[in-house]
Length: 176
Ligand SMILES: CC(C)(COP(=O)(O)OP(=O)(O)OC[C@H]1O[C@@H](n2cnc3c(N)ncnc32)[C@H](O)[C@@H]1OP(=O)(O)O)[C@@H](O)C(=O)NCCC(=O)NCCS
Image 1 (tube, rainbow, N blue to C red):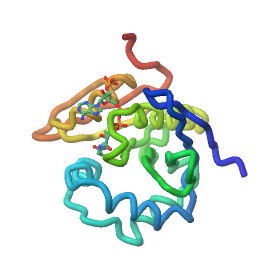
Image 2: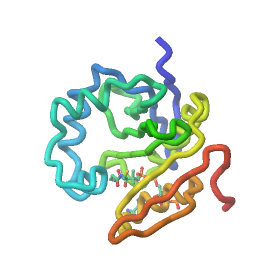
Image 3: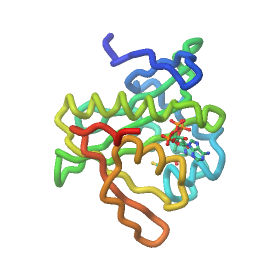
Image 4: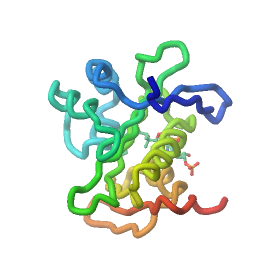
């Protein structure tokens, strides 16, 4: 089955596999979410979400790969052990744009995994006609701001404690 699987390298050079999410990943997604710190859970969902419910897990894994796409990262040793997820969900009001969300397991932070996931998701989004990612995050979420700025985040707008912005997918991130 072609599930978009590819090997990527972390900053250390260590290999990690990325593939499209499967409906059979629901329980694993719940396990991975339960292991995240409260801060990471809050930053991802912008609300206190102590556990991923069965219906949330089903929604996050029953993707159609066109309007809703998600890639998971797993270690080469165990393809069912998820360590990161990146997804886009298209806006019904404007299908050329999609909301971007990303999460990496706390113990894997700072190694370049989110950077790799965003790159893979970006290529897939372009294939299916998404032209722009939109993202909303807490203004103090430095890791995701750095991640998305490197990916070309622009139009940043601060509203209270939140920042929103977009990434035009035809463009690469800013030069170093
Ligand atoms: C945001 C998140 C996905 C980043 O994942 P990651 O795999 O650690 O990211 P990377 O290692 O690819 O690094 C991406 C950028 O963040 C920076 N970064 C990583 N950890 C950081 C930290 N603790 N403090 C500051 N910057 C940090 C990196 O230096 C890098 O910046 P650069 O592109 O300027 O070099 C991860 O922190 C996470 O899952 N957070 C909780 C959920 C969340 O906030 N999701 C975003 C809302 S949708």
